Image (cartoon, rainbow, N blue to C red; front, side, top):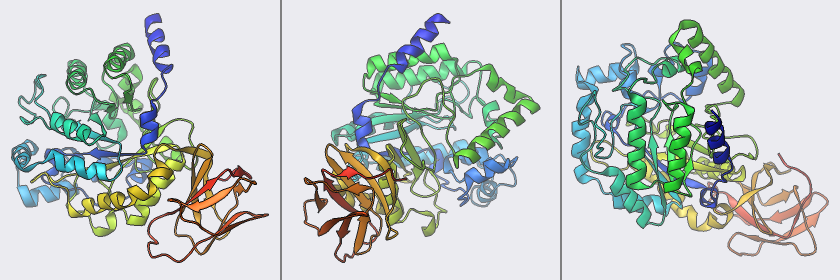
Length: 485
């Protein structure tokens, strides 16, 4: 016990590396056999279902990668879709088509497209809940032998990503593996009860160690929970940091404890579900509970209302699914304005955006709808880089100008960057006060008329055509007037 306390204390003395805090944007890649049927219902209020405590909430998961679980509900939209298009074909049969699609997969093209967005790191889903591995693992699955790709997707993408100057990380589902436990999951309590026990903890640790040794990932991104106890996990972290000294781990590493075992009885499961429902309602969305050790938080399809002292990474897909959903309609995708403002908002609050891309499972290509969003980021990246990457939150995330324009702030040195969403011809920066040394310009150095007033710094903007991307004003040597919200 004393050794365990010493280990966790030593881990907590670590500081998150500056490369991660500087990055602001990462790309999440979700590609698996579930990308072949590529179907999930178009739900847009997943957290609302969890808050209500629906007994079959996961039957309506908008995430394509939950296809195999949704298929276990006879009444689910996925089951209806599967019966119509695939009859009684088992989920495992999709692996053949998926592996054949790898013949046309080009990791260099993916990496080039990701780098153009200004992303500084890429996290690949190496194994999701279906247990399928995207590398030729030597840790054989005892329940489904050969359940992995023969092509080393992890290794090839890692090389391509690093050749573009980005960091490479891995996602691994340590909490669920449906080849070890295929219990139907309808509620969060069911999910905790479905965390495999027995030999699975040894299997999962061996695979993660294999991934660390082979690929030295800069990000170790676990999901759901971790199947072994704390001391074994702290040792895994220590060995990881010894291999990758500037690596980071996310917050979904809650080690197995007797409390989780309560999910195996009805009362305990209800208590767990009530706790998760209340937590989701209180936070306004899906935020994992804090484990004893982590480097950063991972809110899902949501962000925080203000600046956070704890590093965080908002995760979401380009539409309502992390993986490719062929059923998504145009209105399900982030608009240009929403995407660019989302990145601005998260950066101003001290976080990163990990934006998920779901390539198709039949040819390994990125759909036109998703590629369009990557292209929007790429078009904006050269303009906005100075105001986002390498910056830190200002004294406040932002506010609403007197004219009604949403504004977000970032800072670097003596500069404050004001990012404005669809501003009019006049903008009052009421949180800032001019000094004798103050200078104001558009990002990039173009002059802009401005004056100091009792209300703050007043900036006059000319007409522009690109109303769907933020305007950035660079302010030198100004003072904070008051704390904005």
